[in-house]
Image (tube, rainbow, N blue to C red; front, side, top):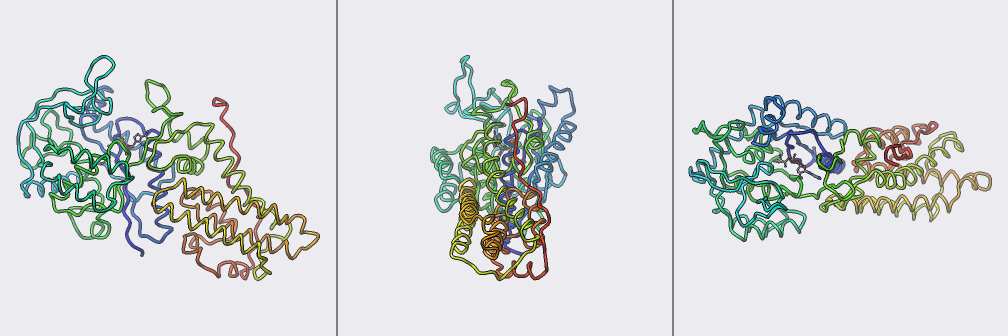
Length: 518
Ligand code: ME8
């Protein structure tokens, strides 16, 4: 087994059904996980739901439901979304699980043993929507003159007895952490957080007495922990913490916490400070991705533009949606989606470029060579040039994906696909059929090999379609990782086995705009 790679998504608030932003994050995490697997890492992917806190209580009250029932019902929809989008998670965690309560209480005890917790009274501006306290100086004024959080959500003046965490003590250590490596990415978010921490840190109120839907504070039964203490600990719970053998020993510290830009502060200020306090090693990296917008607008119930990601995947295909999200948006920045953009992008690149290349290559092999795979044919300079162009494109895809620059990686892949299509046009195998059948065979066999390479390269993004294609090409399921790209014998072995391709089935159909969108 390769080097361990542990990646997590944020755990979602199950106070409603999953939205497109949840789908975007899950897909990106899954592509990272599959990419790392293809690179030979021993990968673990964790996702789940963040079920405590005031926000959940209030939603349950509005719906006249028990909060536990709301959490269970909605958490099921998040799991369904992961399944529908082909998210290959290893652990789906729910913060209401008893093992999570135990893990969080243990983290608390360690912070307390380190002298970092004390009881005091809290007065401050609290936003239920953000589940966060804000400083007076951070607030903004709404259109009606009301006070709002920096995220634009309502705040209330709140007074309660509370446990505090000595966050102020960690300012210098946090600044040193940001300075030394790439703990926070992208760079712009690192700068933003460093500026915030340089401005000074106040101790953090980390328990509540006004409700009881949460993890109980050890030794203070009338307090439940602030939901972010409990939520962040999920990354440890899923590995069996506090048991430090087994999965924890293997996978902690996490390689990457993938989260959205609105929760970077929690993951890069509070979380490392809690861990430092508890003597637990820090995750290696936190990446704050951008928001996905609907034609440039945030989706919201009041605008009536909320899209169910499962419906979208049903309309266009799961692979198509996955490809679109990663290709269209420069990862880290905000991006926009629309029905038009999905259809245009995926028809141009998946259906017309790569899909068509694969389909015409296999069709010609089927029609003109009886499907037979032949090795050992003469190689012309144009063939060598194409092999090199494709290998270069794939190397670039792998390098860009390792940096989470998906759009650029896919751009390099697309350029390699264009080189193949140009090769087909220039070599015109249909004309060679009469004039030089041997050369035609060499051209078609060159195409067969580069299609297989390009397919393996993009498999983390569009796994189902690529597996359907590689099945038709006789590529064994064990030889679909990047290591297979380095195997110089595969083609000769396949030919020697007497493999013949059947009449091919396209794997990237052309999309139409749904009637209600055109
Ligand atoms: O924040 N585009 O949960 P959540 C892209 N429970 N990503 C988006 C998005 C959008 N339009 N809207 C939200 C929480 N997200 C906490 C996390 S982690 C210990 C606790 C992202 O359901 C958001 O940034 O509000 C976050 O990473 C994830 O979706 C879950 O958001």
